[in-house]
Length: 99
Length: 250
View 1 (cartoon, each protein chain N blue to C red):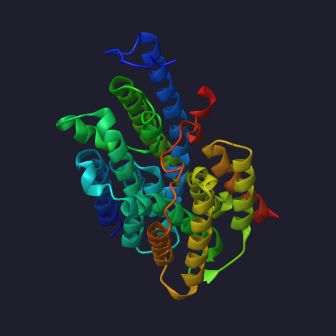
View 2 (cartoon, chains in turn red, cyan):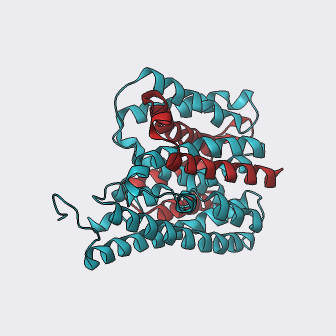
View 3 (cartoon, rainbow over the protein chains, first blue to last red):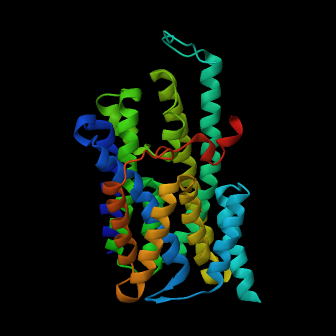
């Protein structure tokens, strides 16, 4: 099942890239379509942040991951590089669990 | 300074070298966080092979993180795949902007499509000639591809030997990764509102839906906001300054 998901979405992602380079602009260049394509990453990434940090199965929880997210926010405000943001989130959550 | 009119048929060697150097810098910095993708993916339960297949074949960071993130939270792999595809639509948008600039025909377009990502877009979309746009696109895209895949393998092998991912906070790293991907887009006021509503909607339906569905449902916020609002989004295309390794060259 995981392999099918990987292959289907990999082929799909490639075709989405190819479509952008190949399809005449007039076909896809509609203001509403473009706005939705632009806003989808915002909505999906925000939802992914929320669910990854505050959900456990089908319950909402507040645990060490929330501390990790807070530390990530601080790292981003300090303009830390991506890898530092991710590592800081992981380490702070791990530390909280040790306490 | 670029020439104001009548661009030369080819870039001076010095400018070409500078563009390639910038592309490599972005490749190195982006590759570094491929390590986190590899480790997180293995922690989510994917095999090393599956993790490497994602970086080789899908090769678009946010979609890869989304697929493994949904699987990590217990969602069906196919909801993860759908989320990955929805996130991949932004590359279509980038392609539309880049196609007239890169102006590739035939088989080259099929190759270029695989390395059409945030980084290669940011490093080519603002160039003033097809020649320099192509150099920026290829140097960045190929450098990121090579290093992202190497780092994925390294991260996956390291992650496999770590043991319980929760001990190292790898489950918390996923949220940090998504936030870092979202961050540059949060400069825009409408995007902030969309992000808050999407997060609230997703959390609201967590208790009543299978894992993976809340994130997909949040796409409705993007649909609605896209239909109801009209202002342009200044963060629509990725900016060099937001790339790892891309900022210091301004």
